Length: 321
Image (cartoon, rainbow, N blue to C red):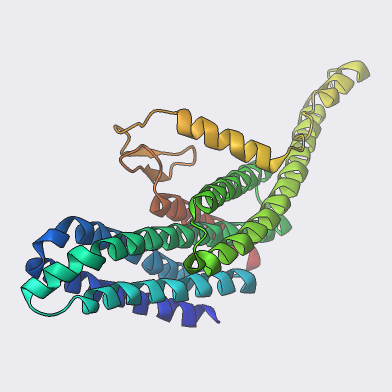
């Protein structure tokens, strides 16, 4: 499926969710006992709705076409989401009738069915969020590769590579956490498969970013050393120049990614919530917003990556003309 078709599917899914949320509100008016479960599903639906909207926006404004593999995964998860929303609609339709009939059917079957659907919606929303962030990181990687070719600021590109490594590690950590929570039910089979494919893709991007980070770190150190030596060679002897070269930092050590991911997850879980954090700036001056638990929101991370991509593209444009 091409990016335009996926963007159209995203807009369609968002519209379907809006209609479904309205239908749920109407249903609650007739079945008061369903309020808590329906409210939970409505919140999940509205939270899910923002993700395809972000994906559609990302596709429409992306400076480079997304990779086919990632397009296939996103398309599959979107299709699954549409099916789950249809199941929610089906659950509501099953309990139609008089108010007394609706209430009786809800107590007998509806409450449990809706709770299961809410959990399914949450799992799909999380998967789409991870795919969205992976899409943004992939765009940053591709634009960064072009920036290297036109010899952009190496130190800044080192930071970009580090951000990609950390971003993919966070995605892999979140995938592992989600997979550990998925029931063994057949309804999650396709979602589990998409998560496996997303894991493989994220590992590939992470490997590439790690190699680039190491290469750029060494290049940055070489450039820095060459500049220092050029400036001091007129006044210093050979021994002093050798000392300058010997101060070059060692390249990053390789590590077991999954052990590191588990350690990061444990450290993150041990940290107390930071509810007073609402918004702040990162080291590059981009705004970061946080949820009630003090975690940066997916929208915030994606917007920061998009801003960095736009900045890189803008810096390269004059060089091409």
